[in-house]
Length: 330
Image (cartoon, rainbow, N blue to C red; front, side, top):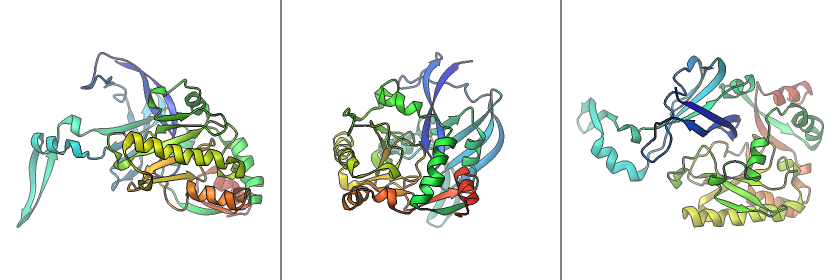
């Protein structure tokens, strides 16, 4: 059986929660794909399904809990987007089976060649109880967080309860991992950042473009830490990030949505760059804060985000929600 070594990568998913993303780092297999990419056909052959955690039929995505080599695992299957460049081949090489015909309307089952019918697969292994809970469909509530709430509830929770290591972030910033994926870097220790594709984006079309800017300063956890002294950093990310995307992907600034999450999935400041036409996970008003608005707010009040009451969604199984509930704040 072919073996595979994996490294874990944090990522925001559709529900705005945290997951671990598996990236292949070494494959011991003689199987090679059409473009020279390694093929590991056996990694999921022993996966035993326990339950379906959630099934997004509209998005063509399913989250499955099971066992992989006696360890809890989550497998995420997602149909990849259609690509305009592939359409001619889809029409010329696929087979059609008629389902129904009525007047001018007819429906078929189209069977495309395997390389045009890929399923993006994410493996979370070993998966903890926290991962399993986060992938389940659960009731959410909008939480109100005042300055006092942050200082007395959220910040202590972050410092004590955040169990996910940020080592993968440091590996990127120190160029110990994912060097080949860097789209742009400004190495300044105070205003610099790295721009990389988010793992949700397959990089095959700009329609669903999604990149992440990870800042070099190590002491900024989230929106709450930002003050006027960080304006040069934020402006630098906005301007150089937009310029890099224009140069690399020919997508202008007015076609981009640039924002921060609060609460974020991990507590090292990072900025999301997505195609404005793409309904990206977590881009709603309940969680996303436009970077341009953040800059203007800090220009108006240097401590704007330290003092402002912020609102964000939490699911009932989230320990932070329980902490707010115990404090009588929800």
